[in-house]
Structure formats: structure tokens, C-alpha cells
Length: 194
Image 1 (cartoon, rainbow, N blue to C red):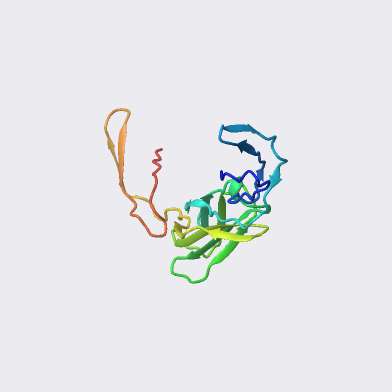
Image 2 (cartoon, rainbow, N blue to C red):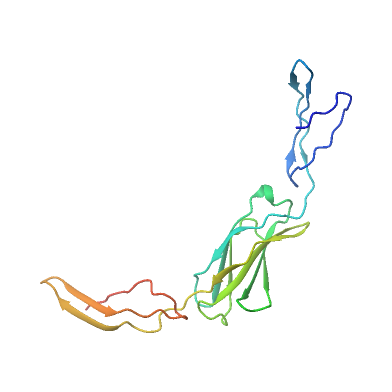
């Protein structure tokens, strides 16, 4: 801290965080050394301000058909800068000029799901997430690209064949389903026998 002239009896403390409770002590010093600190002042909360820290780790994807799932890391309480804190989620299809805006009023939220039957599976969206409180809207994150949910596979595997390997085992093989822009990657297969 800054050393203040011995004839001064007040000081302005700067660079404090908004909407945070502080208490202060004063310590006297001279050429011999530093004395005991005063008793702490009463708690004093700084005034609220527009939040300036945007959420981080904007990601998402997955979800069901016709869904866009957006996730982020919540902003910690000491960076919310005031009451009425929430998130602003903005997204648009890649290449579009019009943003869709949604407000998530919960402080603890870290996810937003947009559902619309017109969303085609695995469509890329530009997404950014911002913050607001009772003082106004704050900073937006940088743009992230997130894909809408996949659709279920539309075709069965072809070329299924079985080969007896022992008295108690059969080897089953098939041709993989090719990657499809609308259905995405196949995560697994189920083999049924009867």
C-alpha cells in the first residue's frame, strides 16, 4: 500500500472490486518501525457495476435431434459485480447475419438448450455467451462453433455374416455404416441373435 504523509488523516483507496465487502485497518510507521494495526473498520460494500468478465469454455453439442446444446463455465460470485446476475446466450447458424438471443436468469446455470424442429442434424452454429446484472449488460465471450444434435442412424449395417468358430462361439461381421452429414458418426453397434 501507498505510504501516506503523517499529517494526513484520510485516504482514498482505489482499484477495488465492485459489489465486494471490505474492511480496512490503518498502521502507523516511523523511522523506528511499524506499529500495531488499528481495529478493523466496519464492513463496507462497494457499489455495483456492470459485469466485465465473460464466461469461459464455451462449448456444447450433442443432445437430441432438433436441439442445440450450449454450455459454459459459470462466472464466480466475486466477478458478478452486482445483484440480478445472469447470462445472455446468442447464437446463429454459421453464415447467417441474424443472432437469436436468450436470457438465462439463473446465477448457477452453465447450460442452455435451444429446441426447434427446423434445426437440421449436425448443423454448425456460431455461439457467444455474455453476462448481465441489474446495472446492465456486460462482456460477451468470443465466438465458438457448436454443432446441433445428431439424428439416429437411418440405415442398417449391410453384409452381415456369421462364421462358426467353436462349439460355443460364432464370429459375426458386417460392413460399417458410412459417416453421414445428417446422422453423424456411429458410436456403436448392437448384435442380436436368436
